[in-house]
Length: 405
Image (cartoon, rainbow, N blue to C red):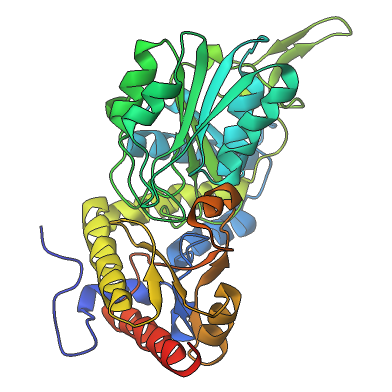
């Protein structure tokens, strides 16, 4: 497999990378390293959504006329594309507006009884933490597994928490703070030994690396459309291994076969979980985005992003006064400069060096209690970033650290 970028004298760029970057016009204006929050959307995806608006914009699943049929076909084609990408079947794919909604569909759609037990972790994004801890008000017991300070979840820590009455084990695939990859298969096997369901937050993994849900054997995986898949915001999905174990928790039109004053008969999965008009142009765009990612190659994307992430980590670790957190191997790198608030670092990088990064607690407040810090600066790469941009970040951080640290 050829690398995405061959070494050259033009700042680490190649013909292939240059071709990719042309699909993301904003990259001509800024160094964009906030990809763990949202990636940019390539031109072919935007053009696909424009085609919907201009050529056949109608509602989905709600009409017999030609435009409605074409809209419905386009949405279902996107579902099939995503299912194939994940190694799933179309009926196992529920479209959502984001990973957060997907995770909440599981927490609200499973049948719990008082005394059931749930495990989540202190490594989680709030969207895979709050829905589970909120179940306490229903009499559900919740255990919180603590990660290492390097951002890893150990199987032993789950073994110490899991019980015979454990119903759900929820954890992230790749930490949105550390960029660390968790041992999903071992955790799924452990949960299965106790008859517990597994819920995996795949927001930072799907599209950034190969993910096959059949191989992972998880029961649920929540997916973001606007991160590794390069799709538009407002798109996501939930993979459901066995849709029969999940009950609809959001109600409305399009999700029912019949309604009387006394009885509701729901549509078969996945449609029973998708009431109301979906984000039709977004879903269509997501399907196109997956094809775009596939055309580059997920293995190639993973290799390139890891190379850039390693370059950032190594460069920042050599700067006096800079702390790089965790043992991540992906393109997500959190760090701080001693004596300077993360927000101030981000503002300076933006206003002085034209570099966009994230600062704060990254929607993972419980995790920063372990790190004993208010937050961090987070640089995160995507397939379209270059070595030259990474070096600009390192140079900017070194400048800030030497002048203000």
